[in-house]
Image (cartoon, rainbow, N blue to C red; front, side, top):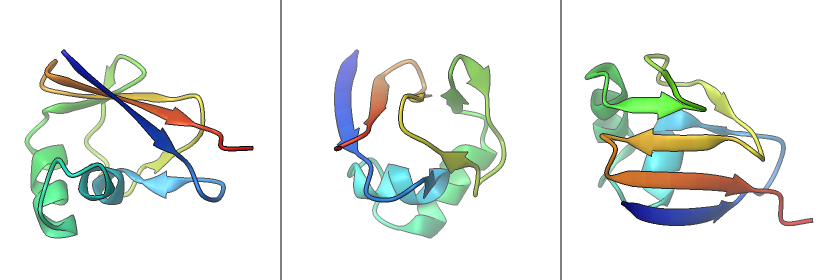
Length: 74
């Protein structure tokens, strides 16, 4: 499994935007499609809300292939 660390700039990032910023999808729209497909989980629970607020300390997984650890840069 590929593990990525994402330094959060602000209080949160919307889930579909996080996928784009990490380079997993080419656009926010494609990120929304991936979330809607059921391929994404947050902290081990499937997440279908495309604009879910992802905060520092959370772990996002895509198809058990990529894990994104959201870090607090401070």
